[in-house]
Length: 128
Image (cartoon, rainbow, N blue to C red):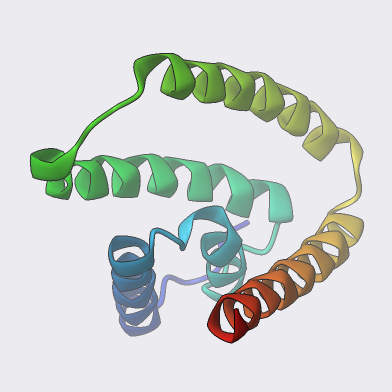
């Protein structure tokens, strides 16, 4: 069940995630899911399904803004898209079988590890 919609926090969250996505190419699911939970979607599975719709819409807008410099490697893109589709189906099946609390904790650990990896990579690039 979704709690009362909070317009101002939702607008600010959407703007920040949009800026991060447009400027850095990040944002998608790893920021949207926790944001949607914060905004009142209290089931992890529901937050994930909403985030996928938002990622799709956000990706279309971002792709349009990059059209002037767009050079697509069609075989590589098709391969990644196909494997991502297979992974999404598998992930959706797992999502239905795992308890929401475990998913939230695992997702939080994954975010921390991803953040640590990004910091390490940035430090390594700056040092070298």
